[in-house]
Image (cartoon, rainbow, N blue to C red; front, side):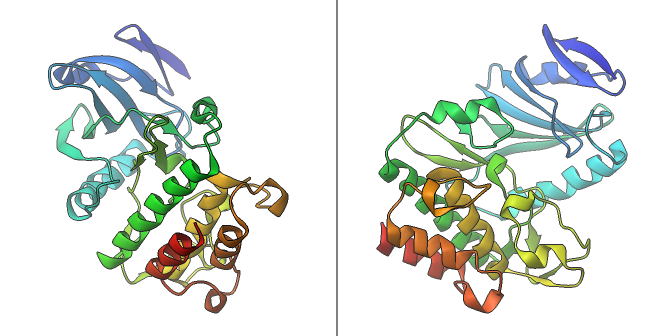
Length: 272
């Protein structure tokens, strides 16, 4: 392992890597080097305003594959960001071949990450259950739009979500592994955090569809209104009706869940 500096900030890698290309977007003000995806991410300040740069090509600390694998995955992700549209999805500005790989450049969203691995999750503070319920509603509207546009959300978890603590606006910042429907489990254990994965995401050959996503979205309600590890009733801060909506979403048997994300979103609206 090694540590190098870019604009005075440390970047931890397996080996040194030329990051001089970042200067085309201005100055690095944030470094995100602890992902297991093979990507390095940077917050940039420059003449075009604040930007978020996701780069593949460097030998990152936690990625188990080759840098070339991460480059191929990020190149493929470009087309998902170009095809899928929704107000809650961070905006892709450009995709460029740089350094020894490629980079996707997004508008910066000034929000708090809900990822449990990030200390900033606590910066959301203790807003009211109504505030948090509104964020869930935005997430479910996004999920319904994803399904309507013919995609299946893969690897959607708490760290995919940012929330503006002042306005309650949601931003979805990571859809790299989303797939066109219909999709099939071709890995056995799919990409993602086990806290949010439906049972079929562990079964080779299983169908992955919006009913699968219903489970994930039910679990994510606990990120905002409960405890997404235990998913217990005692930690729930929403209403009883909202609890019941999320509980049905997470039924192990597919037939017992809400049968579409739109149905889940409508149930959540009625329960609020």
